[in-house]
Length: 186
Image (cartoon, rainbow, N blue to C red; front, side):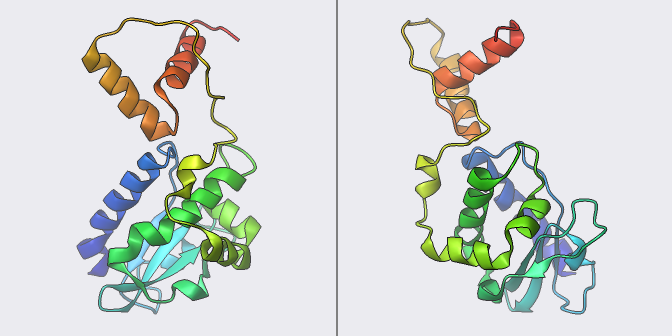
């Protein structure tokens, strides 16, 4: 089936994009089907990809996180998203979610439902790829201005920088946040 063929690839690519954008703690229900009749119940997911041609998908957003109460809504401008364009299609939607959610734990589907497809399409139309890098995360720690040098090995520093990047922070900010949490410093 379509889901078996491309869903693992879609999941891996979405996960990599979320990590790159500092949203590695984000999880949501996503479904993929090649059947526009609703096979695999894509319309219940927070994010769904429904086949609309060879390697092309309709994008649906806003389903309830518990897959109840409401279904997703089609994004008309993304009626024939090419699978090759997955990251460039989803980046603006994830950037909007990152910067406009009401709480750190607001579910992706709830966010999309709350802001509505017209607002999402307007954001996509004005968004410049890569601009999320200059956007802050309203729920992330504030950037830290360092006034000291701490010696750590280069392999540890590389890992800290990698993990900080996944969260959308710089290394000093991540180290500060981790130490504050570990040592119960407010």
